[in-house]
Image (cartoon, rainbow, N blue to C red):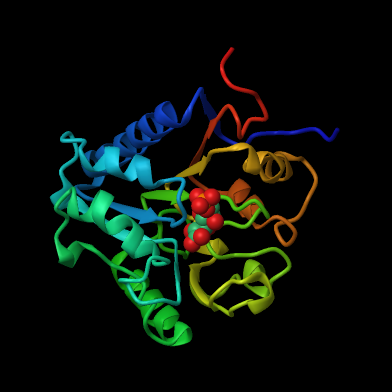
Length: 251
Ligand code: 6PG
């Protein structure tokens, strides 16, 4: 058993419902703090299934002035926005439409385009609209991250070169037919590390090993890309349910 250190705050909730409520509450508070301090806030969304119920609750938080929130993405699949695989598409109903966010405040990665040109375009947009808070990379105020069962985060996958990228802010990630994975577009480590507040959402027993590998004092981001989050310059809040914490249901 290796020593585990959770960098930042760990919030463990008893079940999926409280998980979504807690995640929405903390993400919403971070957005409100950003608006109070700087007049506006940037929110970067990950895809996958875990955050969707939290997005739906977040959209209904009428304490948030959504006219002052700009929405970005952590990653996207190389698919059109109407595809069921689209991360933008996943957030469209529960969050973007529900919170009535103006199209001009929605900066999606163009999954329908060639991934390299889409990545270049997104990087240019990010550099032009989001200022750094700690160093050279743009600092998104609130970043919602997930973690794959294999320890990936964003679209940075184990033993792939994109995990080591330190110059580009947004990269195209080639498809992996053997792993049934389409090409992706992803933020890179410098942007992830520069976020002001990262919320990592992990729910279900499938996440136990990945979380243990992230929290282990030993290990490398190449093997477990979600370990990149440990280098965050801002705050980190890990939100899990009992199952992801390796515990059974509430007795
Ligand atoms: C993606 C996500 C990815 C996701 C994890 C967890 O595009 O797939 O951005 O990083 O957060 O794969 O996905 P689940 O929440 O579905 O387990």
